[in-house]
Length: 300
Image 1 (tube, helix red, strand yellow):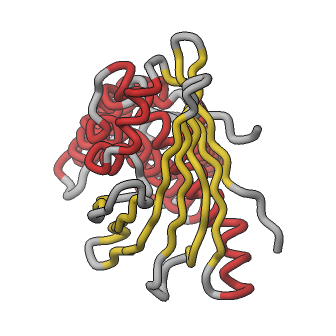
Image 2: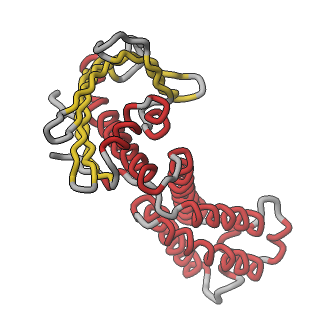
Image 3: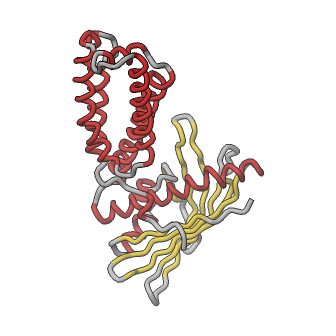
């Protein structure tokens, strides 16, 4: 299965020297690049290529370790810089066996165009190539682009990568959580289960007959299901967090009016919706100007 090399390009409002330092200094590089937890340069002599080792902690119990070799060049004519890279790992569980690539730094008036292209051999034979083509390669390409945007924001705005990643993963982690909550509560108790307590709450609010209440319950379930899916596809997450800051207090009031004794139940609507309100508030403030992989060009 033939695959295309990974290509990522971004413009940074800074000098080549600053971008070079942020990407070539191992202590700085490992802070913004999602692909590495740590990078350690090994001693070298004179003009020898720079050898290094790297680590990527996948889980608390799984760490990928590898080796690398880089060589930097400087074009005195136009100031362009480049760095070639050869990397790999001997660990059997790594999706990557060995690869090569380069980084290039071009001055664009007051900005620097920073780009990379790299390719590698996938592990685990034919099955590994399929996994790489449809899962791992798109994921690591996205991670590279997101990392480039984090570095850009670090250089241009001074916000540390750790802070950026905290806001990013908080925002999108909460988005996935709310998607699951809305989808579950729309699908299970309303559409599939038609739970008696749900119908009872509607009966105390609307003067409908049982068949109409069932249809209304299913309609509400479909709306909640669609809203959960909307959480996964809508880009401006802050709008959805803001909407929930209004919706959850209203749902709490409606539930207490419909079934007042529900407030005495364990895991009742009051405490449940209060928790969701608090999470929405966290998401609202964390979703401001999060880094994004879409700020990068992914094709030449």
